[in-house]
Picture 1: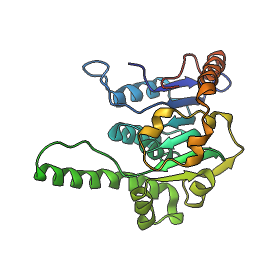
Picture 2 (picture 1 turned 60 degrees about the vertical axis):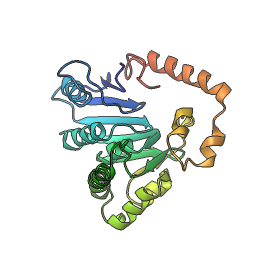
Picture 3 (picture 1 turned 90 degrees about the vertical axis):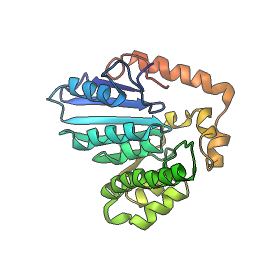
Picture 4 (picture 1 turned 180 degrees about the vertical axis):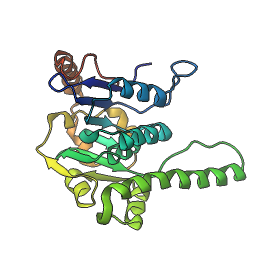
Length: 242
């Protein structure tokens, strides 16, 4: 099982680190003690106490809610300033991780996707009622994070409607509601979105469906991997999930 993240100290600045979250956020136990969240925390601690700037790069369709909440809280409470870059997509719980950063930067062709949490349920009517109540409580933790980041630009009523509607936000739309601080020029990597994403969500924008040339996508991914491997200042190994 590969980790879905990669952390590296910047070669140009001993006080700066790069973190990449590429791929599904999974809940996994590598051994008896080492779970996803604890492993992420150990890697974060291994960067050292001198780190005062973290550049968090995200291209992620979402995944395990509680693992994502834990990672977001680690970012929020880290002593370093955290700048999140949405390299392509931050969907579902990945958008909560991004919202935990001090600053969010999005290329103009990247997106956030915000929705209510899901849960697979088996059992009787009582089980389903409890599951619905649990999902409401889980959603509330995301609401708190979004509102904390957006400030006066976003109301609780508005963010709950956004979540109910499974809303896909462009960089400019995210900026309008306080979930993006800076919009930058289009990023080529934003075209690299997995086919698997479209099977998970119901309201994927048509422009994303049309933008992928499947015959070229694999070659593009191979080029990204090759480029990343050569960039020893940022990535020493192929990123999990790319």
